[in-house]
Each structure stands twice: as structure tokens, then as C-alpha cells.
Amino acid sequence: MTIRIEVKSAKVVEVNGTSKAGKPFHIVKQAAWAYTYDSFGELNPFPERIEMSIADGAQPYPVGNYTLDPRSFFVGDFNSLSVGRLILAPVTVRPA
Image 1 (cartoon, rainbow, N blue to C red):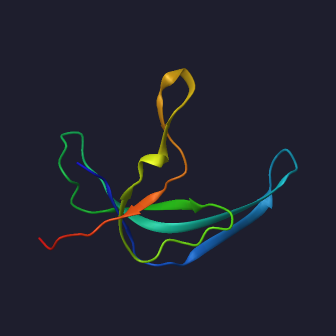
Image 2 (image 1 turned 90 degrees about the horizontal axis):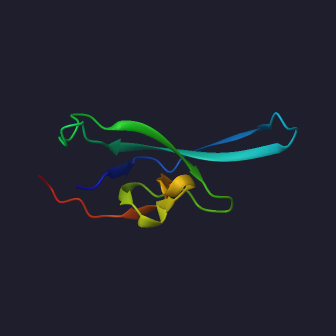
């Protein structure tokens, strides 16, 4: 079972501001659609809109279908599995 992510537009939104600590920040976000599963392992009937941050200097993801790249995961505090910045890997979707 994999989570499919569909990018429908290469459009990005840029957010600029100042943190509570007084440091300026710049975030580039891109919308996508995640095909998620319910608690029984069944594919949900509709994809859910997500926002991904795009690394500084990186290009937005082109329109297409992706899955989560293993580099999105790492072992964090207390040896727990964590998700970092989403990295997408392209996939080919077979017609139903």
C-alpha cells in the first residue's frame, strides 16, 4: 500500500514574514492531493488537499502522480519514525 500524491498545478504560493523571535522567513508552498486510507486500510473515496513546502532554490513539482520518497522519513526523538519535508517520487498510474 502506498500513498499516491497528485500534483494538478505547478503554481506555488510564497509566504514572507517575521517570526516571533524577530527573524525573517520565506516559505514556498505547493498544493497537491493525497489519496489516503481509512483506519481499516480502505482507500478513502476522495483525495485530500495538502500543502507541501518546497526547498529553497528547488523547482515546484510538475503536474503528475507521485508517491512519497523514502528520504521523506527519518528516525527522530526517542527513536520514533518521523516525516520531514515531503520528497516526491514520480509514478506511473495504470488506468482502472
